[in-house]
Length: 101
Length: 188
Image (tube, rainbow over all chains, first blue to last red):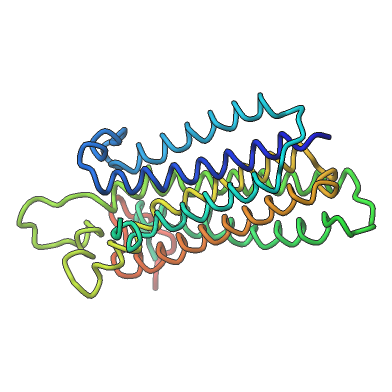
């Protein structure tokens, strides 16, 4: 069985997590981004940050799955990239780190 | 003995979905780490693969229910804004925390982190479930995929743990209460 599907899922999850972190910081720093990300007023910008990140994650996953499902991909590099993105997301969502940016 | 509607939702979100998810994480990690290692010689039956698949699907459902109830049911009550000059902030947990320098960090660090980091749990575990559903026992022959799946499960556990810890501490200092009262047991 080719490893492309696994690589697509892993990398897309890393991308989705990273986008979540970036959008959380962007909404915190920019009033325009903050108001643009209010999709549901009672929840505020959290609704837009999470919905957008989830959409980007799922679209990335779909595209990568379509391109890689029958292929054998360089998983070591993909794993490393995904884990770095995931780690950055953990850092970016931590308010004291976001405040330094 | 009674509980408010909002208190009940907080209980369902935190101790129900979130607490069960955290408990389930350790089981998934043990299964993935021990039974599906490349070096293991023991045969894996379809029943065992099916069980772990079902277990991961249940975890995925719990993780999504936890973040969705948190963001769309409880969070609006938490961040509600009182009328200007309102002296009683008990029904406005965010404002209550921010009104005192000894508790404001529970919002500015705790809630600000929790509300975002919690979403890494469902994203990670959905990926893990999808990959395991696709590869099943074949995951033994793909050590790189197995490693990624275990790392993401650990991060998912960590994210849920951070969210759970801050959720519990915030609720201790400024509980989300209100709505109708539900009588559980009548006292003497």
